[in-house]
Amino acid sequence: MTDERAHAFTDDALGAHDAVALAALVRAGEVNPRELVAAAVARAGRIDGALLPVAHASYERPRISREGIGGPLWGVPTYLKDNVDLRGLPTAMGSEAFRARPARRNARFTDQFLATGLAVLGKTRLPEFGLNASTEFATAQPVRNPWKPSHSAGASSGGSAALVAAGVVPIAHANDGGGSIRIPAACCGLIGLKPTRGRLVTNAQGGKLPIDLVTDGVVTRSVRDTAAFFAAAERHHHNPKLPPLGLVEGPGRRPLRIGLVVDSPIAKTDEPTRRAVEETAARLEAMGHRVEPTTLPFGEEFSRDFLSYWGYIAWVIAVTGRLVLDPSFRSGRLDGLTTGLRRRFQAEFPRTPGALRRLRRAEAVYAGIFRDHDAILSPVLAHTAPPIGHLSPNVAFDELVERLLRYVAFTPVNNVTGGPGIALPTGAAPGGLPIGVHLSAAHGQEQLLLELAFALEADRPWRRIQD
Image 1 (cartoon, rainbow, N blue to C red):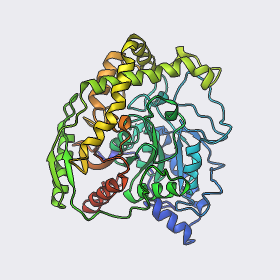
Image 2 (image 1 turned 30 degrees about the vertical axis):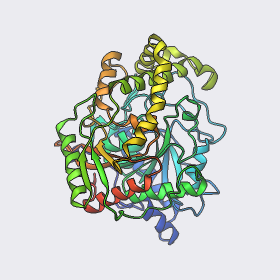
Image 3 (image 1 turned 180 degrees about the vertical axis):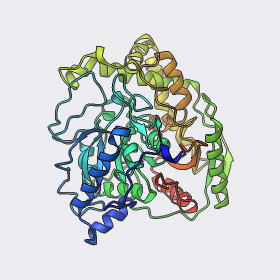
Image 4 (image 1 turned 90 degrees about the vertical axis):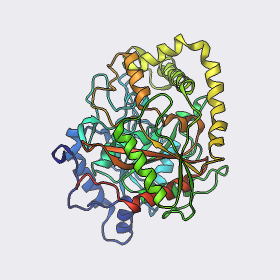
């Protein structure tokens, strides 16, 4: 197993430090940002051929902002995902359907991201328009999992997760429209917090949709890095409709009521994942929390409605691509998943109004769960990261959709309802692949999730790929 791992950890300026530690070294004058960038660029060169996580590099000109100079994460190297605009670099969205041109300006989220002090070295690969749950392509080589390169790194933030897990950078941008922060975090042994809808500035793509599924965030190797990022981002923008988050620095003290969900109504969880969730539940009980089995009120109809909405997004991309993306866009070049989703939406169009009504009502249903529970513990995914090819867009569409539904059986609820959820790397499969567990909470309760994450990390530190 150890020989299969692909990582870049070495004795350089980055070492095995997380982002918080590196920023502290910069402030103390013990290392300068140029040294950190040089180390990250060298590390990227060592793993890029094996894992292929980078879409566009800007190694000669790392991107920083004036607002970020001296910020909480000042000088720490990172990457943006290639579905967010960064001035001067193309935004290709993982697609071969158009020729991406350099962006003329930053996205609003990019400005918030840079305001934390992070230095962007480039952009990371994602599957076409982020629609798949594995970072695989119709003709290009896939992004591979650092823990086991024959397997998926997850999606759609798979490129970011591969870079962080492999040690190139300690933190990288991710965003989440159906699980795409939490899924690659689970596959690659990382922490991934999908915040409450509106916690960060509105994502440019998600904000234009009838239901905004998309939230931005980061994947990290330590809970304190995730907490530090959200505290720093809040200094740039705070949504007055949500309680301030501030800097969460450790476990909470009060006992919580935690609902335990092991299986989804649409998919039975595999044995390694089930074991990881149940072991995490036992650890939480040992800490004094009350954990009790429960069920979630989102079944097959919810999954079908979500798939219909996913198809609507693919249809919008196909019919507006030339106008919105680039005149070079050709819908005939879209991959099999995007094309299949579009056609499915067209065939099921009459049910769309009802699906939208039901999905909008799900937010109130979700809020009701937390009248009896402070948090819900579940798997992130119904089974461990699959081998490359299992979720390829070249798989026959009907079979691919069935595989996706059996895999991504838990995370979309938080996207539809806007509730926060965090993936934590508490388990491992017999072959060494990481397994993530998922904690959900009521809207605005990221503090509670981070406190639970800190407690689990302190109780049993996460596995390290370099050990």
